[in-house]
Length: 308
Image (cartoon, rainbow, N blue to C red; front, side, top):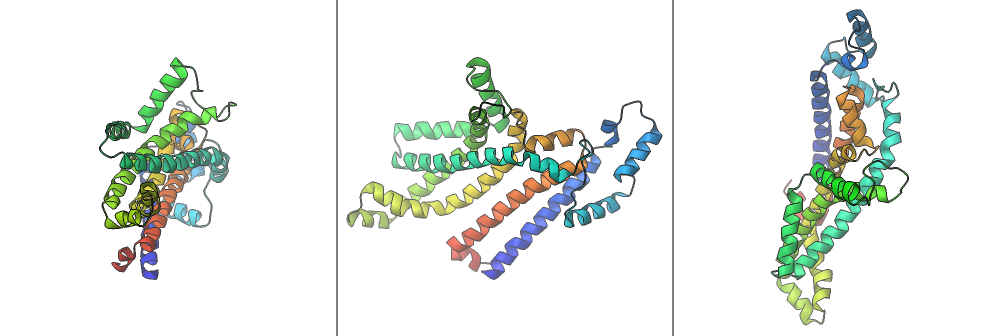
């Protein structure tokens, strides 16, 4: 097991380093930040002085080494636009993003498993076919399209919910962003739960449990669901990564003052330190989530780790 964990941790570290390197190169290819930071009529002398101040006049490989070394020391740099330390900017916006993702993640797990069990129990009925068709339709709709549709329907037409921002209306501001984030993961978890549970229900020990006195519902929930959830655990981990990444789009659509909207604004203004740290934060969250899923899967199924 130790060898299995070391291998997975090594791959996770390599993945994060690779993403940091790619983001660093891609941000430098987008252009000169001084075009955003200075007026159009600024002289070339002023632009050169600003590049020197920001350290952008040095060779790109030196900039890369300095960036990696500073990151290793915990120095995340200072925003070009806000002229403030990057870690302060992200700390201020951390709670809105975490609260949004936490609610969406837990709702997707609860409703995904519940709908999956319900449709498996109602297998081959009209209700099962209707819910399956609806889930396929929702799964095909991109998050930003779903968000725009919700704003059009619930805010502009029905005037029931605020169209964006945290505002002062409490939980009402969370409803549409949470739904937009949670619908996709809920559908995927429900479909996998349904198919896994249907496979398990065909195994003989379910009939054996019923023969020993358990009701059909008890046999499904106590014996069938426990074994059906093994592949679902992997899906749940992957959907957490989807929620973390999807927050960038959702926060932009709903003007949500979180990490995602900060990254988008920084990318538009070529604020390299903010973009690099933001992408690193999201990539690290997704990578660590997948790492924990891999490790937990090794505990759940010894055959996985024995192959390593």
